[in-house]
Length: 275
Image (cartoon, rainbow, N blue to C red):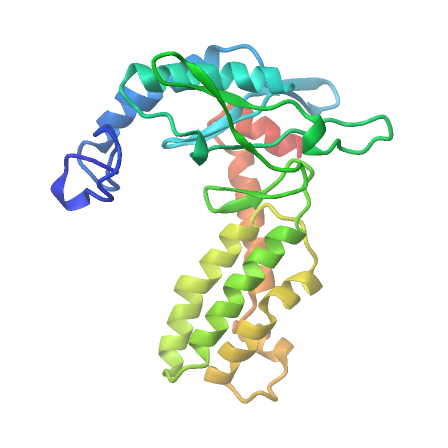
């Protein structure tokens, strides 16, 4: 980020159009460098048709947050049309287009109803530089997860990789809880650092309670040893609000659904209802 606010300047990388988190100039820069393309994107044809009720379909074009964008299209050619417009707009206001920071996925079903391997799918590309040279984007298999805004997801909705990544993070956290610390410190770290990470990573994932126990096994045992004897029954701990991550995740899922159903955005309401 290269915002002009001295206290928020970071990295030292970019063309000067970036906005530091919390910078006073950040909202204006978003309007200048992001909102115009988003408005253009909204008016573009394309997107993916989604059935949201017995009698209604809507077209979803993707989504974005700050400068991260995730287009959804029915064909690779349509994705390339979108990336072409994005690359041209970036070049127009002086941004160095960086294909290495983008990843793509495509689900193309074969004759037997299985997704084709990446080698049989067309390449996604983006124009770079004055001449608009087309550079191929990195692509992943349809079943591999791509991290977007902290969430690992893929178009085939396979969640094993996501659970494995969260397990790796929790195993690292377990080492921290095995260190010397007071009960209150352990509780504060668990509630303010660890629980929000798990909820955020798994908010839209599909998994069983047993799956979550496998993910949290090591870190839960390490955390429990900071507060209670190891022999304390887990269900009794959960009843007292200690370590009950399963219900915390599901409450967050329920709240998300309620927010979607009451959103001021029509498409968010319809997609939530259709889900």
